[in-house]
Length: 382
Image 1 (cartoon, rainbow, N blue to C red):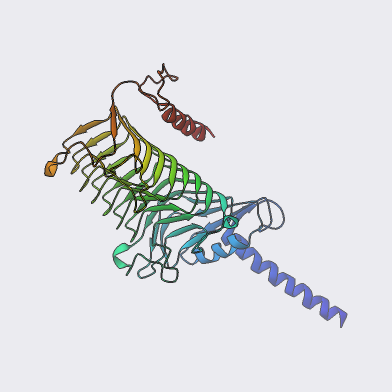
Image 2: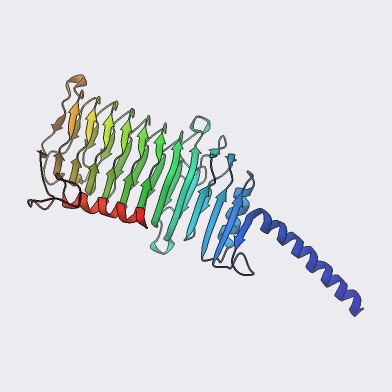
C-alpha cells in the first residue's frame, strides 16, 4: 500500500513538473532563483494572441522584484486591455510589434495603473517602461470612446493613472477612438521620447493633473482634435523638439496649467490656432509659460491668449520664435483677449537676470529651459 501511494505521489509530481515546465517555456523565459514567480527578476514572453491574458495573470501573481514582458515580432489582436498594475515592469517589443484592438472592445489598448473611478494614493505604482511598439486602436470599429464597463476610462492607446517614473519610448500610438497617450491622476516623473501619436479621434497626447512630464523628440500629427491637450493642474513640464503637424483643431490646447516650456518645437498647418491658451469656468488659466525657439507656420492663427485678466492667465513669454503664414481668416500671429503675452528677442531668463553662456549653448536660454535640457541629458546617460 505504501509503495503504491509513493508511486502515485511520484507520478503526480512528474505531471506537475511537466505542466510547470510548459508554462515556464512559453511565458517565463529567464529568471533568477528556483521560483520564477518569486525571483529577483522574471521575464515573460508573448508570442500569440492568447498569451496576453495569461501573461497578465502571471504578472499580477509574480513576487519578483522586477518583471520584463517581451513581445515577439508580429501582429496581435487584443480583445481586452493589457493592464499593468504593479511596479517595476518593462513592456518591450522585440521588433515590428503591432498591437491592434479588436472590433467593439471599447477599452484602452494598454492600461497602466489604477482603473478606479477615483484612484487613491495607496494605489500608486512606479517604474514602468513601454518601448518599441506600434499601437492601433481600430477606432472606426469602436462604438464609443468610453470603456464598456468603466465609463470613466476612455479608449486611449495608452492610458496612465497614478504612476511615478514612467518611460514611453519608440512607440507609435495611432487610430485610437479617444487619445494616443493620456496621462492623468497625479502622475509624475514621466519621460516620453522618440514617439508618434497620430490619426487619433481626439488628441495626440493629453496630460492632466500631473507634473514633471518631459516630452522630447515626438510627433503629434493628423489628430482630429488637438496635437497636445493640457488641463486640470498640469504643472512643471516641458515639450522639447516636438512636431505638431496637420492637427484638425489646434496644435496645443492649454488651461489650468503652470510652469510649462515649449522649446525648439514646430507647430504647422493646424485647422485652428497653433496654440490656444485659456481658462476654465473657475478662471484657472495658464501661468508661467515659455515658448522659445519654436517655429509656428501655416496655422489658422498663431498663439491665442483667450484669458482676459491677469488673475486668469499671466506670464506667457514668446522668445525667439518665428511665425509665417498664420493669417488665414484674418487671424494674426499673436492675439489676446486681454491677458498679456510678452514677446522677447535675444537673451532672456525666467529669473529676469542677465545670462552668459550655458555650457556649449549660447543664449537665448532661460534657467528653466536649461534645467530641462540638463535633466534630459542626465536621463539619456542614465
